[in-house]
Image (cartoon, rainbow, N blue to C red; front, side, top):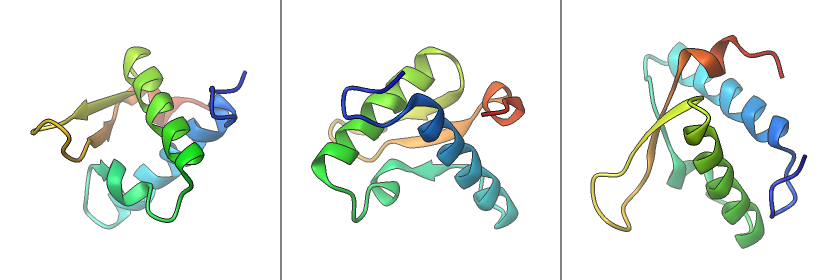
Length: 85
């Protein structure tokens, strides 16, 4: 299955899982969506945003946005980190 932007669901999940592991190794427990999207095309960015919503809905990640139009911070849920993609 692919997102509307064309990225496979499993690819985005695995990408985030790997990114969260790297952040944990550096002593951080969250990711900034803005930082993840640096250098991405509009199509890639919209696909990643959509997939973030899907993963939140399926309880794979926790998301927080403190201000309207502000950065979205993501934290992994146990379900994401234990999944084998």
